[in-house]
Length: 324
Image (tube, rainbow, N blue to C red; front, side):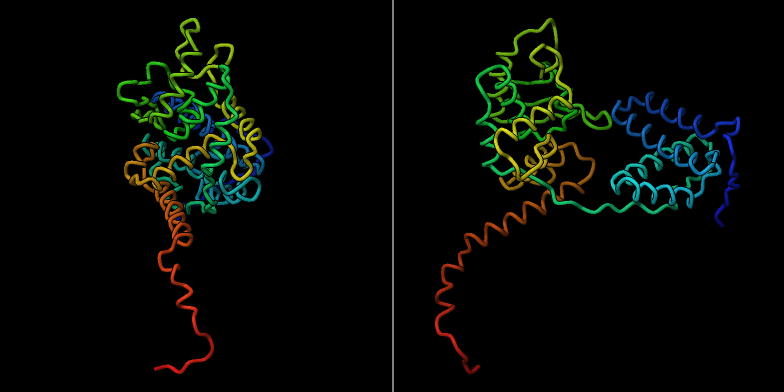
């Protein structure tokens, strides 16, 4: 039988702040586990949203007083006020938070075990066409900025890196002999990602213009010698897309990641190699790329159907005919 919480509606918070203390402990544990700053910020933001939600309703609860019904109401509020994606983020965060409390023996069981997973509508995966990529590459000048942009475009397209992974690359992460990049991905998991001849040539040209900047080891730099961050990369890609007239797909690093995945499969790559290339922990997202690549096969078959060349023979002789 589900344990009911004693929900007290208070005019001011009590002196015991058990939930904030538990949140702080959870985040410190994340730091000790060497979780990425991005992941820690992600957890902190969603847990702050949950705490504010309780405070707005005058509910100052200890972790042991939080029931599945309270959590369901919060997730429903997130979905209605913000979005289904944000509600899903909160679900993932709360599941990790309460699992931590169970592991630390603060709780005997997690109330999240009885909370249904948030359903998020699946959106169509956006990708660039070959013509759009050619148009963006054509905007790259022969200057430092142009060489850097060309290297960014081809590295993202050829490797499918996340923008945080791209910005984290150093000169030492590039293996010219093996033509691979040493990438630190999600969950601090390191992997080797290969790149092809076009990306190699673009990187060589860029690095020749990059030169030495007072011992700066970051691979991609601003024109002042500082490491490029994710926001600057996004701004550069948006400007490039606008200049190239790319309107059919959102011009972002993640669209390059999607495009890399779909083109890899269209060109004969297999799903398991793609999973390793992209650093996915499961095949779920890879299956979506495979579905999109399969849809492309259907479209190409309709355009080049061997049987359709005989369509005229099928259409000869109209009117009603007696079945034999």
